[in-house]
Image (cartoon, rainbow over all chains, first blue to last red; front, side, top):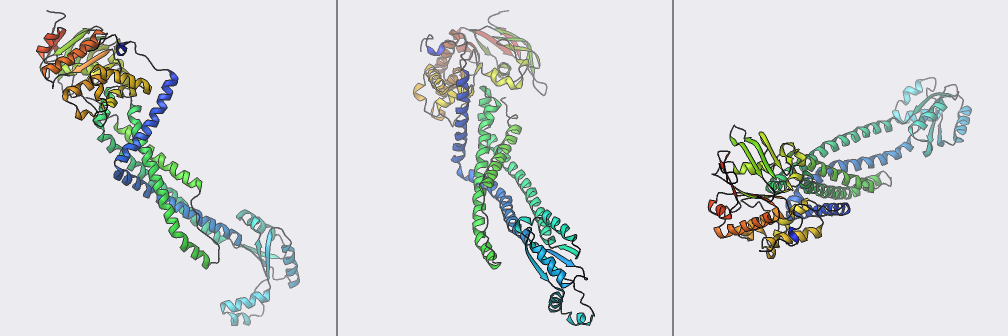
Length: 327
Length: 223
């Protein structure tokens, strides 16, 4: 046995405290250590890590995929704004000359890309062709169809408000009887997409809740498995924060890996869908290819899933760590 | 270092584990706590380590009244106490070194300091050559020494041991007691619960006898 005058016994009662910089440095180093230690622990049972992460990934892939499809739909229909047209029905009293003049005047406006003049006669002929009411129309003394000018606003002036303003201006022309915006169907489509987008948000919220519970439950089991260790650490003076740390990092890893799986799944899904979508677009003679995920989406999804992983483990740790006390 | 003033502990259900215990233990004093199973030895140690709290009376450790220590402060409080258990309470998935280093890691010591002190503590219990082993590969006596190294690595002013030699043969028990004796000599207060009366008497230190939760004999104050 050694004599008690050696290094170890020095200042047994007056214990030395580490300095502030050492404390900080040690603190961050410990965090880094636990960070990778928790990954190492998970890596030891890759199957259970993968299962939990896959549940998170599949769950998150669903709203993410829907969100990206919706984004695509918005891009497509965004182009349809430009297709919106304004129909000007002229007063019956307007002569062909006056109508032609108005047409020329409209053509000179910067807001307007294209103007098509459909005279009363042409309109009647088209009506006869299309409806088959030709005989009935012929029986009339008078042509009931007014002159029609169809105006296509330029792309820069085709959003809803500008269209409305344009229509308002046109209503003031003395030849004009009635102005109709051919935009309602686009607006209806937008309304539907608003509903879908709201539904995606609600779905995303519910699925986030589910992920929170999945992670929470997994961490709860991990805590139960390491009950003895927690008791020992508490007995030798481990703080709650110290005990909590590895579990929080475990939640972080679940979130990160789950998020990556979600991104991979969505990527594969988009890849599978892109060729049929392009074929469909080809049928419409529209050059369109499915948008992939942008950087912002990727970061958001990863951030969200990491947040859910941390949140879930925080919930579990907060609830169950207190229950485990030495006795 | 330790004082009990009319300390009582009643467990839920009405069992009185300790009844009006008065006790003073000075710094650098070594004492043995003995009595039959269920006499209250473990409960007394638990009151000191704040694993349990008194239902009445006071327990003052190192000048601090345990009933005033808030839950959040308990970890800090326990770092001043080295506890040695009969069943060692080691972590079996970590090496001997990591087990002993744990209190230093918890206290946020720098890595170099951790390595130095952990080796010093292992050296003290004669297990420096086993630092890379896992506890499961060690004998009972060696495991207990790992437990002791872990208890003293943080240099606590107070050591508690609950039946530290309960599973060991007399020779090993005696060795363990010698380690405690060394710590006492450098100013550590040591309180050991044990029912190994022969060994306790041979040590020649203060003996406290508990019976049904009451302190019935104290060799320092013979009635």
